[in-house]
Image 1 (cartoon, one colour):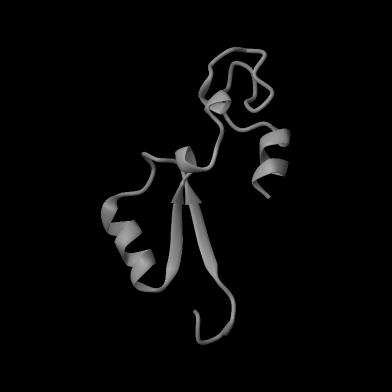
Image 2 (image 1 turned 45 degrees about the horizontal axis):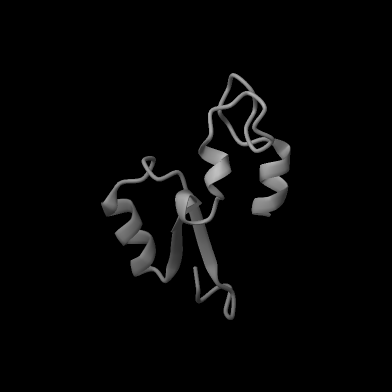
Length: 71
């Protein structure tokens, strides 16, 4: 992929428990940088409080605000 898109850095951000070590190793072998979500998100994101602006209440997925921050 790097040959086709020279000068571009590829990054994969993943939920900590959603990718196996083998998948991460394979991505990094291809010079694709990987990042655990827990290394990026503030501690507040992990709070299960229904008033947490970073998560959808009663769902736990990232809110539109969190998507905007991540982008």
